[in-house]
Image (cartoon, rainbow, N blue to C red; front, side, top):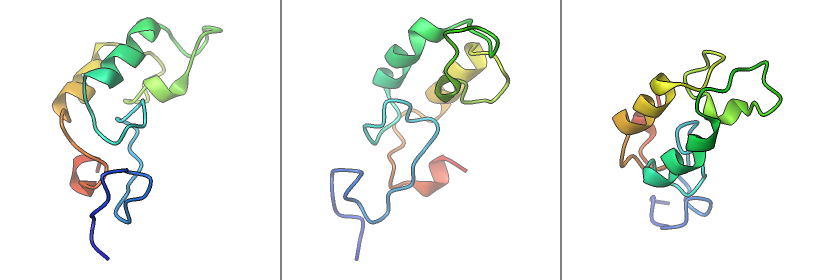
Length: 83
């Protein structure tokens, strides 16, 4: 079976990505919008959400945002984008 479904959750080649933070199947501006309110929050903050710390540094910072930009346009069927 090929990677034919446009819906990432029905796609047999679906690879969940830590960089697709909104889960829509593509790394794009929507991921940045979802991360924006968490910018500057560290793991000891009560508003901490590790999903947005894509670089796993303990702080949601510019490095996390730049990783999203680096992988801009990658889809869940492009496994190479995430490893």
